Amino acid sequence: MNVLFLCTGNSCRSILAEASFNHLAPAGWRALSAGSQPTGQVHPRALALLAREGIAAQGCHSKSWDNLPAVPDVVVTVCASAVGETCPAYLGPVLRAHWGVDDPAHATGTDAQMDAAFLAAYRTLRARIEAFLVLPLEDLKTDPARLKAELDRIGTLVGGEAALATVGPQSASASCSGGACC
Image (cartoon, rainbow, N blue to C red):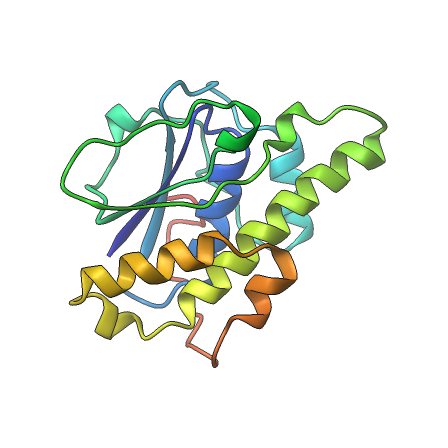
């Protein structure tokens, strides 16, 4: 099953989500990322954070939703519409969810403050992805209404809440042999 993490620029949040999901996902589940108006480059702080976390980032690049290598089954938008950011609307017969996360690319301040913004975004996304991956995925593949409800519930959780929402271990083998951002 293909999960598309979608935002506007595809330089930070969606890249962090794609790489983290592919690092943790069981076989048969794959993440993609894209933007409605891609910046054309992955933010260096996003790549540095993935490296520090031991998550492969080769193959990560900012790309348009017009050039996806596979059709998504699920689309998760990660823009922060609460702060006035325009969230892209993916058209097509897919299951949709929204997991809003503040864009760390807009962080200002010291290097430490900007790194903290990236870490906060990563931790929120990672916790939500972990909460998603402990769900009974094989059952949910055939129950789109229940999968949608679970994705919406997870999207309301932040950091530690998402980690506490998990119900049990799930196999976490990497499903993409071409690197985290295939």
